[in-house]
Image (tube, rainbow, N blue to C red; front, side, top):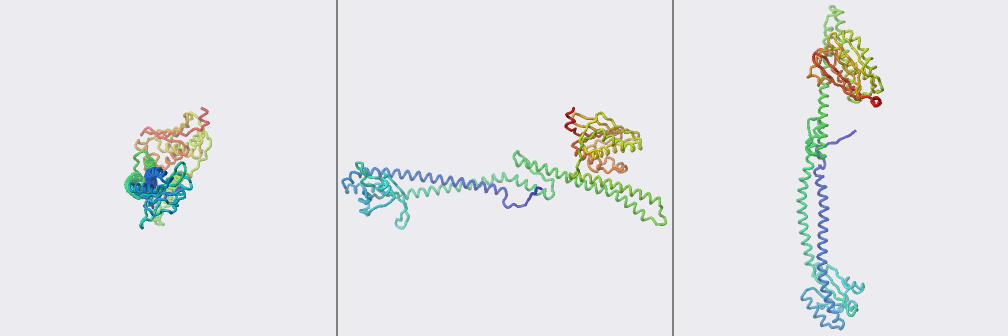
Amino acid sequence: MVIISLTNKPFISVRWKIVLVYLAMLLVVLVAIVYVVIRLTGNYLISQRAGEEMAQVDILALRMASMLDVSDMDGIYQLCEDTVQENGGRILVLSSEGTVVADSHSLFNGMEITTAEVYDILNLRMNRSYGFHNLDAQGQNQWYGYYASAIIYNGQRIGLVLYASSVMDLVLQLDSLQMVIQIYFFSVLVIVLFLGFIISDYISRPINKLNNALLQTTHGDFTVRADAKGNDEISELARTFNMMTEKLENLDATRNRFISNASHELKTPLSAIKVLVENILLQPDEEMDPEMVRDFLTDVDKEVDRMTVMVSDLLTLVQMDSGAVTLRLAPAQLSEIVEETVKRLRPLAQSRNITIQARYEENPTVLADRLRLGQVLYNLIDNSIKYARADGHVIVTVDRSESDAIVTVQDDGIGIPEKDLPNLFDRFYRVDKARSRATGGTGLGLSIVREMVHLHHGRITVESQEGIGTCFTIRLPLPKKETAND
């Protein structure tokens, strides 16, 4: 059993689910792009600044090498001052033991410096090193770049130059760049979100229409149809939905018509019985004629028999509609079933002075339920006898084609008007209602015949001309072995 739950207002509509998924994916992609762009830009600017500063420090270390070897402190100080005046920052010259021998600011002379860059030069024996430090300068955090280069003279490491300069301009530049990127990021996000909302609306609109159509069908409106334009999956689903609602509409109309017709057909004999019984009850006891009572009761009995047949036919149709009818299929000679049926109906034909004849062009074997197929043939032949003209003929022929066994029931009766042929197998449909009731017909016989033939995987057709006669043709598929023997 399939259970479909439909609500008027889902917790999160399909449209918003699409928007949320789209937005989440977009956020992940944009954040990743922003992060990568900022990192790459920052690394480029930092490496460019570090390269420029290190080049100057390397040149400064080469120029100081000979001065430091001879302890020319005046020359070292002068060189430091000239460099600081030109480029800014602060220069420290350290001995090979890490002690400051010259300070452009004359504050750290004689002190030991233990920064990471100094450690790299003196202990790790690196020729150059740089790093960035966040220092507290006058109550404000300031970023500085430290650039260290070894002073080598005649192949001996005799000291190092440590140059410190502010990189706040670079930090501010990166902050400004990050702000610009964030502005662009949120601008793009708003634009893409707007586009995503439009796209999601375009995608979800047919889904919402289909959902609304489904809700209408749950309220019993089977006339609703979904928009099935296009060739995508949703359009295909809409076409399937339209096919389903069309079948439901036809089924609902058939059910209503069936109930209306059944009620009407049952009401007629019930009304007749009521009238007959009331006539008996209204007769005074002393004036009641036994013969009249017998006639009335005989009529009541006929109406009850008619109702019994109708109820039985209705139950048969209900069982076939619900799939409760199970056929007991077995190989059977079609001519035998026809012969048995003709034999049963021959007395009825003779009583009406009608000649009934069976012709066997072939004797095919079919997989059939003998009882049910016999009922089909009985109904068709019985109808032909009832509606045949006086001194008429009914001919039942058995034949076969390459793939089908064929049975025809033909009469030379009054025929059926062409306008009635398309509805002939509909339930409760009668060509001549007055004559049908006079012959005891319920209007269900041909419907049962058609359904029973379909259960045998066959088909039935009818051809008729007014004043000439009617011919019913049944085609039943031959078993594979029977076909192979051909």
